[in-house]
Amino acid sequence: VTQSPVCRSYSHPQHDQTLFEERYLRYISPLGKGNFGSVELCRYDPLGDNTGELVAVKKLQSNKQSNLEDFQKEVNTLHVLHCDYIVKYKGVCYSMGRLSMSLVMEYLPYGSLIGYLEKNKHNINTRRMLLFASQICKGMEYLQSLRYVHRDLAARNILVASETLVKIADFGLTKVIPHNKDYYRVTQPGESPIFWYAPESITESRFSQKSDVWSFGVVLHEIFSYCDISFNPKRLYMQEIGHNVLGTSISVHLANLLKGNWRLPPPLNCPPKVYLMMRQCWAHDFDERPFFSNLGNEIETMVQDERE
Ligand SMILES: N#CCCn1cc(-c2nc(Nc3ccc(C4CCNCC4)cc3)nc3c2CCN3)cn1
Image (tube, rainbow, N blue to C red; front, side, top):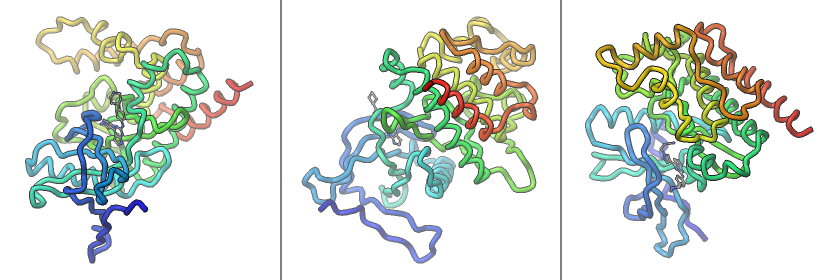
């Protein structure tokens, strides 16, 4: 019998968190780095006989008060998300007498999409790439139904649960759009993944469901490039901008490039209709970009066509 993790729900329901006791959380190996922290493979083994379950534990980077608040927001965000295409929250583990905390999530054995596509590029066909893309759309549609903007949609933050299932992860930059607006303005941009950003996010720190759609277009490009490092978005943009840009910041050059309607080129052997979809996601005017619901339906149709 594997004992489930200790569950202590507090009196006030919104703090009903599943508590993992630090003394039973056995470190195994590093899994990766996310926003605000590193992720480790652990076994939660209260019986001490290695029958406990494997979990992915995201440790808060530093116990700076601001990071702790942001991390708590990430925990609260993930806690309310219940979707097959979003990585599952399991609970939290407090350490150092509540000074630091860790986020406990389901462990996805195949790692991020980046490593998976690079490693398996020779036996992944268009149909499977489109299946992954449609799952990301469904996850994003669910996220948007709760008025969340992810703000860091990128292949590095898509995890592979099985040969036919991927999930969206890393909600460290996710924000809720206020009810009286349809966008979120960020004050402290921090270290931004600008090569996945829509033009309005680069120049005005404006984030919306439509800026996530732009980033999805970049994820499509990554998928159909098999996440090949020599064709990654940053490298392709920097080749165009020129590596020795001085003075004005890279984001100004990037914004001008996008304003001038330069876009990432079609990946090798990319089906024309898929590149067309990327270009729709990269409409400079955010009102012209499709919704995730449209994209999801269009990709489903492509998946069917691929079967015939
Ligand atoms: N997103 C995001 C960015 C932060 N991040 C999240 C995870 C993560 N990884 C896994 N699983 C995982 C990861 C790597 C491998 C291998 C790949 C080959 N080389 C050796 C390692 C295997 C399995 N499962 C998770 C998570 C979060 C929830 N469940 C990793 N980095």
